[in-house]
Length: 502
Image (cartoon, rainbow, N blue to C red; front, side, top):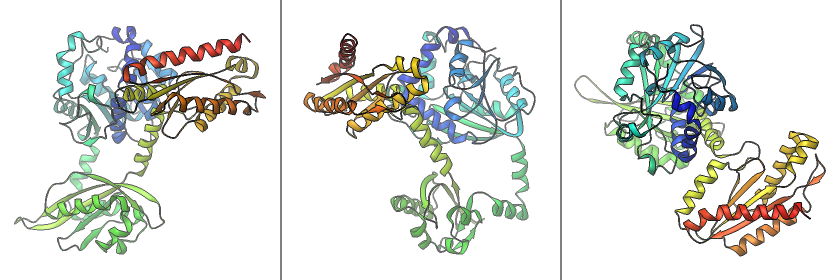
């Protein structure tokens, strides 16, 4: 049973609020999990909670003992089962991969949970675990305030070393690590990229695989097996001598770049043709350090294929030394991560935008509002807008017609405001706009344009004009900006009320 489950039943709305208030940290965690989570196969999240990770990451099934939390997950489209992590209600070898995010600290018997995960995940599958590292500054902060937290009061925090050891003991000996959140939670304002390893980031993600991979690595010690593995590898592998001669390039290099192995061997001239112009400086600095024999961190850059397509590769290289310590060159690998980059970009978009209208969502609006309140782009104006008659359209023509009406209204707002303005849908029929560096006269002109657009914009599906009630306020400082949202909202409803009583 998950320890201390009652707080999640009682305070599920507070749990949900954390993700809104710490949007940048949440997105950073999502991207770190995405980096190690498989893109294909059937997945299960153990301890799915409200579905904040399973939904955007495409994990279709989740279990959790809290019915209150599962209601949120169901609403996000997850197939959920009320169950405990130590006794999963699924047959052996049911899933291609499993996901556990923070749940590891709430489970009464962690090893029982991991053994159950090993049972239901196929032998060649993997388990991805995300958690707060106890040894990090953030982890120590949670420990110091543990008795004050309704969620963490009964939790058990683990270090990265302890989690790694438990995974190995429970059948996942092959581990890969990434980390993020290197600054205190209160100071995280922007999405932080993930980095390999652990020890500097508070949020750590580890992917565990079964022992089959270890057996293959033992076999690869023979020369014949090594040649077979490198030639059949999906990664673009190479060996370059100190003089610049390419002694080996794997066939995957040609598949990824479109250039033949012979063409790729023309180092460094081939780099001019392949590496994206904006990334060449990064590449050449990396090569310079590699040729000095140092240990380098992985880098990611773009290449331009022979067909002119832009693709992302993750590059890692290491110096090669002979038995006498002589520097023999550099061994490297390039992995095509274009799909991951596209998924990350889509994830960023989905986390910030309303799916129906394509405008920013409420979470993004609130984050930008807080950012502007602490910034110096004043005056800042706020416009609140409400679609008139949406309920009548839904009742008379159905919700599909209502959605189309909302999309028409969103298009009017999008076409009216400036490129630097933030236009968001913050509720069912409610929209809000933040206008940095815009005074009341500028806003008045824009509102006039909206009113003019409404007179000619007709929703063809319902044959009715699109009508918006508007309210606006201009703020001169951060304090008045936060009050301005309520005042603009009040003015908008006053105008809406006047329309109803005409």
